[in-house]
Length: 547
Image (cartoon, rainbow, N blue to C red; front, side, top):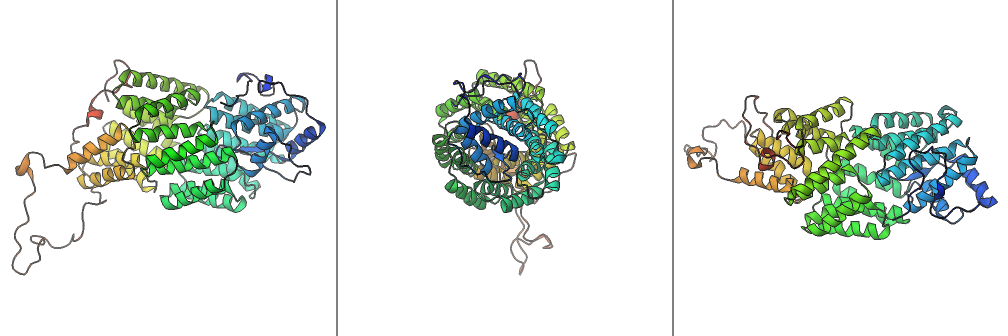
């Protein structure tokens, strides 16, 4: 794997690592490189854009780029594209060395701070966010944002998004947009913030503005994301394919192929997903998100041993909480409860570390608690998110499901419906809604949504997909108790009366079950829980009551 910056997380951001960013001490920079670095630092700041460090050039450089990893990272930055992990490492080492002797260079501090954000995202090491904040504050101390240092403000917005503090990210992004409406670097920050808050119309407008200001692969990738969030799957796929076709650098190409893999998996096409993720990994072996994606797709293909190998590798190198949760659930689906408990314990440790580092992982924590721990804790977590105006479709879905798991299905229904109605075609959303409707005795809508979940992705979860099929089979089976409990047949029509209209006034003609939702009364009993819902989970603490 590419080398990681050797500087210790607890050291000040201006301190150089003993051997720079690589195992070989850097040689003194030639005069032209030094002048070019100074010029770039004076005219450029960096922001995080969908996993990319991007620069804001105010003037063209007179000299051509000097070949090498730092130059490649700068070139990718200027284009708004991801830098490779090795090039990002070189850029960090270069800027660390530069600010050591030029502590008042505000743009270089902004570049360094945002590169730390990017490294934190790509290594799942939240300690880099603290270093990023220190570097960005050093940039603002050298040159306040009000005096033209928008790059540091955008960097703080990127940092807030990385910490899932979408309100703060929105504030920084909108501040820059108000002062510099044509500064394209503000818009990716705003897009992520608006999506995190569930403000999808605002995200769409920001995406369109970004596309008008910055053409090319980054704009195509953002447009594909917008189409996906609106439920326009064909448009999302076509735009993502165009981005992949036009991508050039390895990191940019891998990100585009990864997106194609995600879209294929969400369509229930795991073979295609495995192929796209594999292509991404061949293009850039450090693109570990594609390793996690391939693991999910391999599970759907019942290639369990390969999936476990991929999950073990990615959780060792990129220990994101959601990946550890997925591995735990895979073990649980295989009845390997001891291994599942080990992963759930590790997940709780990662969540505690994230809280300590100021990263909000409430969504993953709520998903874990709802199904494997304390549903009431999940409800509290998601209510806090909701009251804090973080109302994305993911939060809405998680809150609805947590309420259902806590025995409040009727209250959870409105949130589960809202998640589905955003337009995102997510099999888990449809599954959660269908199970809640089933619990409320709404057989028609439940059948429709459970069918939709399995139609969207027949293997969307190793734990939940079998439960969806089980619930659907029960809905399609004979009425409980046999013929005595079945609806009586319609009476024979009177002479001259159309069949099927006897005893009716025709007022409800053409109305079937479909998506029609009849809200049940509050005194309506809840049906029995499924096997998963009724039994303790491997994730429950010893001695804890089963949810």
